[in-house]
Length: 300
Ligand code: GLN
Image 1 (cartoon, rainbow, N blue to C red):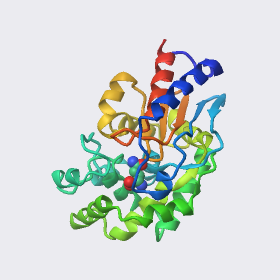
Image 2: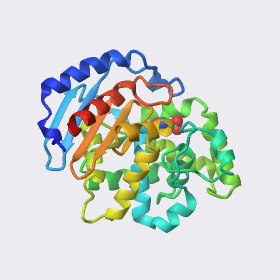
Image 3: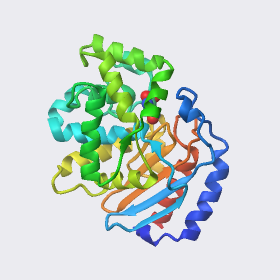
């Protein structure tokens, strides 16, 4: 495989120009006001290799919330704290053909969260974070990630306020069902913890640095846990689009409704992209395009 550090700025800029055109076909999410008001023309990419060679292009100073990209890192953290056996008793690891916030899914699965990359699974895992409320749980995850990932994630309080400003009916139904089936004990606190961690924020470079945690697992963490997280990203990370993307691109990948997408190149590095307009599955149109182009180039 070619090394990402060999990619030229010219090639990257050409793809960014094409990606910017494609972004116009996407839509901003309408259920989080601050994301809906975002500038749709923002576009940023960061390639980072495990030997710290970095390449960035576009709006690299823009700070955005990780939203669902926090999910694989939440999984990594709880696996490291509680072990596989205990975690996979609470959350499954099978792909879902339904949207990330599907209510139908939770009924079909009789309340059992199908995987940690969709809301039901992540809310269940967020309720296990050590801490007494959303704030302290988020703080513990943030510290752990900044320490191991050598990045500067912080909680964006304005984004959190915006997330809570409109009722999210799907997430309300999901937490009620999770409680009815005994997976969580305090639905408000579980949802609040989940909303907090979705608002952990940083730049495209912070996201790429975080990704390195999964590209080359630090000696102090379990290699097996990193492999499990990568595998679940590959099969479930882009929701209904996961299987097609895995066939075409094959890199463990996770998207967030803020427009960011992170791909892991195992033992080599990471690709982080950001562009707010989304396709029907809630994945950033331009970020998907960029990752496809870079992955094709890597395989040539
Ligand atoms: N906080 C968002 C939600 O639950 C995160 C979803 C996402 O990024 N896909 O709707």
